Image (cartoon, rainbow, N blue to C red; front, side, top):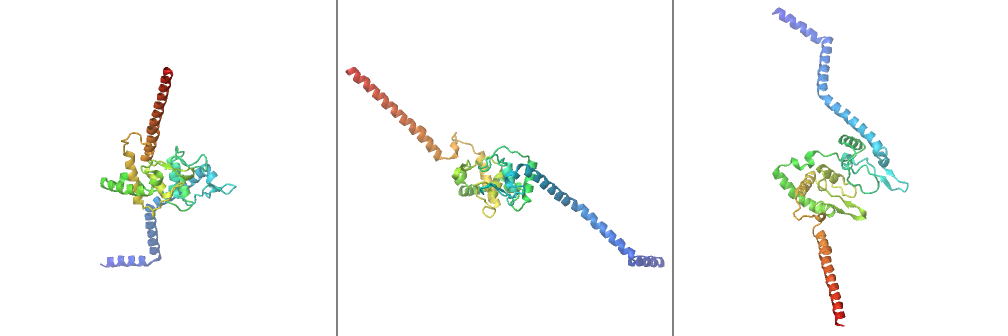
Length: 291
């Protein structure tokens, strides 16, 4: 019993000593550092990789984009004051992913409406360019697949989304893209591109950013869920067969009526002219014979 009391007394004196406090402090620091090292590396690596991505994107930007958009994305004006290349400080990563991911950028002839063509940059380079432009200011980010991909819906959800998306599309999009998404002419030499067969991500980004003459449908105008419904509706159009043979551009009775007038009525008029010519020729021969 006395031995235990003496041991306890020694421990009590050591706890009250300055060395004991230092030991406890060191143990606390080691424990805190160990916990931080266990969880922080992922965040640090993520931040470092993002910085490297932005740096790579800037190098690509200076080579392929700065001539039109300026070295810092501030835009370029011509001597007459016209916009040669717009500013990119607040367009966001989604706009870059759409424009570059569909081959519209870089443009061969600035000033004209950008058309979809073969993509110049790889997926990794597009991600780097998007990260750099996103670092210049605010703007919508690249959407996740859950936001735009109809494949993430169940069968019951898909049917409901298609019905709702068709109604929204007919109310907001058919004036430019026509009722089946085949595109059409626009004022001042512009055009609404065909949106059938386009990647769902790019359709979502186009609604979100409003490229060229297209209106911007922010999440306040058309909520993300409704954008996904529109994409689901367009997905059904991609799979719908053409029962009538030639689609004639998907313009419905307009193109069909034009073909009917040109071919049908034109053929009838030509046939009537031919009959009249044959009748006149026969009458002349008969009059000559009588004489």
